[in-house]
Length: 353
Image (tube, rainbow, N blue to C red; front, side, top):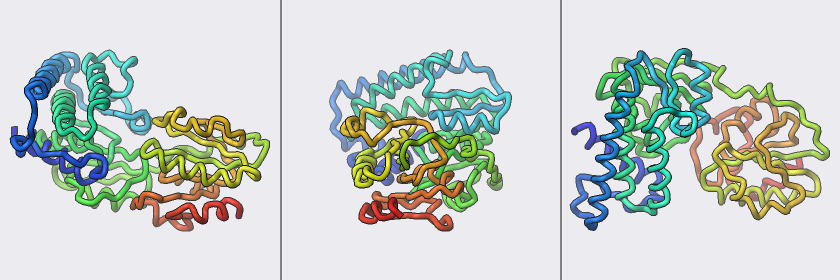
């Protein structure tokens, strides 16, 4: 129970500190008596707790004890884990159809329902936390080693503290660039396999050992192989914009700024795997814009906010412009010769150089 209470406190602290502009009214469980909550909400929370406990028991009977297991909640995570793991069970929480495990199906359904209901509601996070805690505890309890590819998100925090509490070896495999956060709660790990040398100091800043010291392993093979991208047949010089799935309003602002060059260049909007094309309906009738999920090496330039793929294009000497409208502090901002702008005033001139 002590682990559960401490984790819940961290869970809310992270939500409040990191996403404060989005979730303003989160209250710790210990202060729950201050919150007015109706009878229906209380019954609903208990109902979800009982369901999560029930399917946790079911889950234990469906997973045999193994030496190691990898847990993924993103296709990108899965790709990174598959690069280094062999003969290891991989649980991808996003692939309902491909999973035979009953609990993952329920997890995704409840997560979708709660997403519709959240609206800054503290109750939403209590419910989701209870469900996630029971989900990952039931998975981890039967294993000696755990592999994940999350960095600083809430699921990584939950898994790391469960592993710390049970003295289970946890390995984190880097999947992308790292952002600096204020007041980051402790994350406990055993090993870190990182793919960018400029990321190591961020891991060392935020990660704490489960037991003894953390082992850091540099593995450049985790970087996306840009060499596999081909030179495309382009009718006109083309600029690519790599979207980010969060805060798409910034994506839209950048696209509008890039359209000032439409007479000289075509514009390829390369959608992030978690991005939705319909979020960009206002550009559907723009003849100079093509939406795609494929890449070329012969772009005139690449523009992005903080895409890891942008780093790879930069390393291949493709002109890459990083647009930091959000005031982010990313680990790769110290890369040699990086082009970084904090507003859109000079984007036009940079694209036309």
